[in-house]
Image 1 (tube, rainbow, N blue to C red):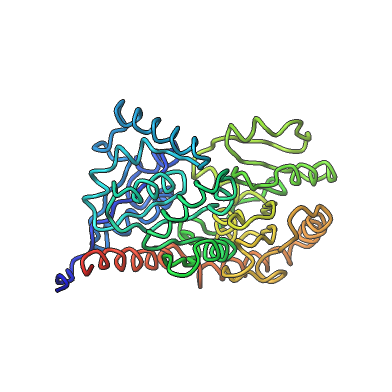
Image 2: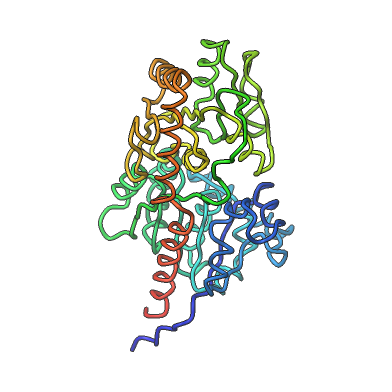
Amino acid sequence: MSAAIPTTKPKVFLLYRDSPLRRAALETECGDGARYSLYGLDEFAAAGYRVSHSLEPGVRVGAAARASGAVLDRAVRAVGGYSGDFATVVASRRQLNGADVVFSTVDTVGIPLALLARRGLVRTPLVYAAIGLPERLAQLRTTRARRMFRDAYRRLHTIVAYGWGEVDALREWLGDGGPRVLFVPFGVDTTYFAPRAGTTADYDLVSVGADSRRDHELYLALARAHPEWSFRLVLTRDAARSLGAVPGNVTVEADIPFDGVRDRLARARAVVLPVRDNSYSGATTVLLQGMATGKPVVVSRTAAIATGYHLDDGVNCRLVSPGSLTELDAAVRELLADDSQAARLGARARETVERSLGWSRYVDTLGDLLSAAARSRVSA
């Protein structure tokens, strides 16, 4: 006989990748805009979920966890697999197994989590956010590793992805009988990221972000082609080191605080986000932030954002082919030459995110998925 399904909200454990950005967000007060990098932590708590996470003081990655993580890392790599942050997952095992459901927010911790769950070391239903998982799976070097990973991922309860390209790739890889793989559009805090009256644009273009699929070379090529335009590039210190020579009309900033990103978006005439072709990245987070700020955005049309984000070229954004300097140049030139067109595009962008891509919509969808996964454990 199945156990009775509780009416209380489940106990959720959020598994984070450790980063200075996330640590800084956790130190801010509830309601601060930076906390939306915590994947709904505050909103879940306010809705009655019992929430904890892997960066709490009680989850300490000590010497034993680091040693165990190093052994597991070597073992996975030895069979041709792709590894991750095993130490954090090992240190969190008690909390992971004490929860009703786990949300793995990124693959860095998700891959070790899935592999440990395959061995029965984590027994809680897992909801897994895939952010570039197909590209990681392509790096598996042996048949043994490919079988091991497929078996591990077929045991998950739900996989969510923020782009349809990734959903399609993962469904094909897992085949029939695997977990649900669902497209969940990311969201943006439209209160924190909003048009700022009285803010004067003091440079032409800004690009923000440092994931491995960003095409900074194309952005710099555009800058070299237009010395009359002023450019700003915001990224991490590590990404900045790999840029090479930067044209004199480009200002590079590294590791600025979260509200600094909002400020840089507000002070640009347009946001330009070149991205290399891939299944998962469309500069999605900054794309939505720029749209919410009411700025005209030019972005590469990758599989991650081509469908599902209500983007309409020439109406609420400009979409250009990945890698095409010609298309990027033409789209930016049109915007900078016609302030009224740029303003209309930005206004429509703002309307789009307010209507369809707000943060509460993302969190509500995720909450429903977590609750469903928790119920599956009770009714099993």
